[in-house]
Length: 134
Image (cartoon, helix red, strand yellow):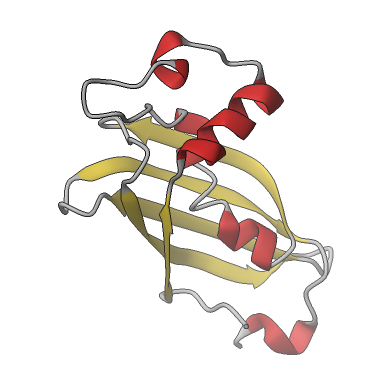
């Protein structure tokens, strides 16, 4: 899939208890809220695990991130489905022949409440010139 400035890319993900358990092991973030379920049996999903949703654009398009900014607005719990809109704000060829990308994103839970806002910028590692949408 080729990206273009002005395009919106959509993703969604439902977090499971196993996701939080694995991320806890990988990150060594063993905050009690990630280990002990609340009164509804849910764990709090790590903020950086939630942030993997918008970073999927980077993974899908070989982006080497230079900056990433996150604003965590409310907790995400296991069982929540998070819907993410990534707006490609800039996508174009640089002087060195590589392609640059800037994007902003907004993530909402299944209730429509915003949980995460942010932006990122970087370069495309393996983009071909003809896919720049020019």
